[in-house]
Image (tube, rainbow, N blue to C red; front, side, top):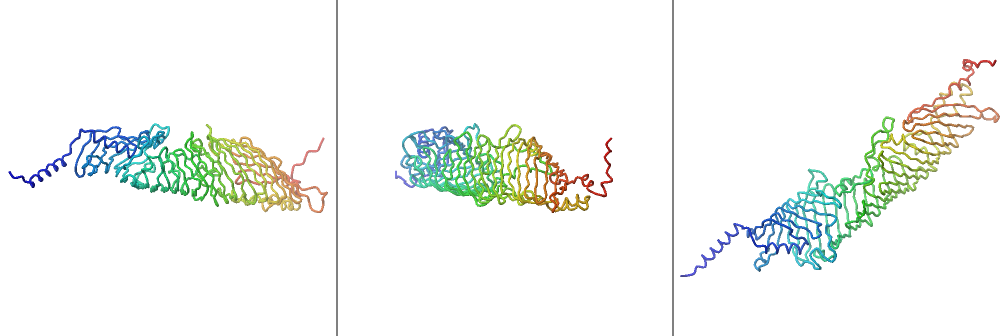
Length: 605
């Protein structure tokens, strides 16, 4: 019988087609063990458990492993997937070997324990004991993935990313590695465009050997963008050194995604950074950095240490022009309708981190207050905040201030001091209060302490002592010279003239003490040419009212022996609208026409 080669080949092809079209469940573990060995050699991860597996020839030879669980030897990372499909290299099949050509992880959940991720035991590389792999992962695809992070000390995991679609290409040992993809970041809210990422590593096979590889990373999301370019090592612990640049429309939101609580109040809006960086698991350091935050451009150095009980943020920065307003704009308004605000302060986060911030500015602004050559610091440790203005030029003079703030059960506990000398009072009052009531060159000291959970409470519990001295100035809205001239001719009109014009003085001073929001003004005086005034009284800090009594004396010109004229008046009412009231009885006594109308004193018996 003649052998028909044509029919034999047709039958063989038909048999292969039937086998390829109908996959079957494999019972041999040899294929799974070979795949597990290659995964461990290339990535340092092992196939911890799996369900059933299926082998198929078409459309290309592959093994599909259901309910696969992979984990890193250190326990730092686990991967669970509903389906792990491994495409096999055809050349390997022909030579009796299983080679990974491509892996597809469906519904993969990556769980990373940040306390152990990427760390290798002493003397062991991620790829095995004392050795490095001579293979690569090929192509790995992630479909519908999630990323869960377990923070150090936390039991539960946080969802960091979802809807991950990614592709990793690492064709062979010694070849570069690339990873591209996109995902959703739940921490930044729903209905946002996917965040896109791209990673390139020049020599990823150096990582298992404990050596570094050049890398570039870019993450582009509407919530933040970051670019990294430098050298990265993974063993025995991750370490990066290179250049970093990034931007975020909201630093507060970006910090929340990184699980960092900002300890101080503030806007924390638009941020951009650029500079040299060193990144370790317990240290983020920027030896040289340019920062722009809330419109302030700063240069210097910064670091964040993560190896303590709480993060330690350190920075030494300098800027040409710094606006400090964003730091206080989140606080409730201090006053409303002429009264201190009763709105309760939000709970502080002073215990969330430690801070050592040193800031110098050629020009600084806090609200409408202006400073030059300012040296500021904010030291926060164990929930105690020490704010200091070590020195600054302001309003032609020098100012210094310090405040120590802590939180207690009743709100904030604040104590501090301030000092100013050679300050232009008129410019200061105009910038701060848009009022011009006093001019001159001032020197002032103040020490204070208070506590409370609102501006009203702080004012009610204020204890303080201070002293004020002003030279060569004027008091606005008080014309003592004109009032005394009127007293000599028409005493009853002197009170009208008193509330206009200005009164010049050579020296003005006062001491004051405050106890539980009640101020006592002591030893107040003003001295000018042939004019002297002494005043004292009280002020209610919480109610924002004042009640001062003053007596002014005027020495008539040309007669040093003449009896000085005296005029008394009161300043009382609300701070914002105090009323100046002359001593009417004294003016009547001075009037020749009105004095006889007063009751006469009874004659002595």
